[in-house]
Image (tube, rainbow, N blue to C red; front, side, top):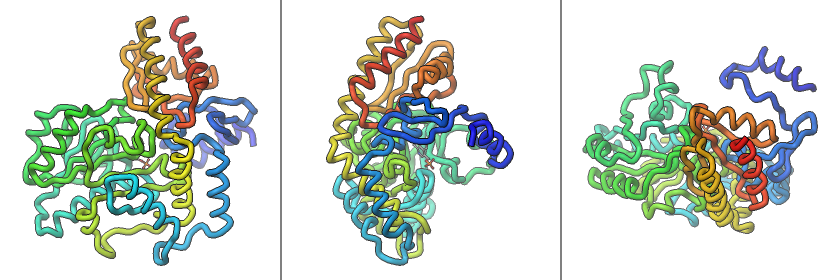
Amino acid sequence: MELQDIVALDQKYYMNTFGSRTPLMFEKGQGLGLTDCSGEVYQDFFAGIAVTNLGHHHPVFTADIKAQVEKVLHTSSLYYIENQAKLAQLLVEHSCADRAFFCSTGAEANEGAIKLAKIYFYKQGKPQKHEIITLKQSFHGRTLATVAATGQEKYQKPYQPLTPGFHHVPINDIEALEQAAGEQTAAIMLELVQGESGVHPVTKEYLQAVKQIADRYGALLIVDEVQTGMGRTGKLFAYEHYDVEPDIFTLAKALGNGVPIGALCAKQKVADAFAPGDHGTTFGGNPLATAAGCSVMKILQQEHLVENAAAMGTYFMEKLRQLQQNCADIVEVRGMGLMIGVELQDAQGAKVQQALLDAHYLTGCVAGKTLRILPPLIITKEDIDTFMDTLTDILTK
Ligand SMILES: Cc1ncc(COP(=O)(O)O)c(C=O)c1O
């Protein structure tokens, strides 16, 4: 089918939640390259919004999920599932958590984390301890509870009244958190690098204060690693940069490298609050999704991709900061590992993103001003150098 026919079908039959999309349709991928339906190759510096960390059509990943497809796709969690048990073991052995639970998306993982925090106090006979503090400008998902958790009015307005019990405070403001927290606080939930609002990292001092304040009131610390997890920031999980261990953390996006899977990981005493029947899912942790997760964990280790994300992230940000010195249009370069934001003067982000697209580079842009760069973790110095040549041309001409 031609692209214009697909656009027509989409406009007639698909719910218009995405507005007018970039008029491209990709048919195949290899590494960083994505080939569109007219045969043009684009370099993917956005990884499908931080999902395809192994790049496209990674040979080992493709073989692993293909092998699973040929065996069985879905059985339900009424029965034991080898990959589910193995992936839980892998996540636990590589994190501060003692237990994992699988679902299918990031919002669902966060919804599960919120439920777990609430039931943890409910079962202690403290139902009044139900408030969750989250950050302004955060993004936690599109279900009703995660929309209420998300600290951005634009996502909340049409869905009033919101799920009660969420309180939002500004990022990196310890005083505001001191004022908001109290005996009613069940959990403080945050992303360590806010992605959707323009790549804003939480400081080490702030997260350590968050942990102290949570401990003072016996509240839980929930870290949303949906975007920062699976090596994106140069550690397997972003909390590892902070010398702080969350009680619960959530994953999705890159956990399945494109196969939908989310996870809820928790310390034993918290995980114990879920008894049989308190939570569940049909698809979560099915044989295919967990085969993808096991394969991702294996390839990250075998190819040292977390270490590569750290090294390439440092290199990329150094190059961007060098460019900033000769280019007044760049206001700030922010990020951690390969989660990078370049804030541009006078809302030029959208223009620069378009110019990059014209040069066959896929990136993201927030609020028209911050260019978002989230390449697959397999990226090399040569890939970065070529991108930087193009970006330099765009910004200096
Ligand atoms: C930090 C964070 N949490 C949660 C979500 C929601 O994930 P999903 O779209 O898989 O529900 C996202 C998606 O962008 C995210 O970036």
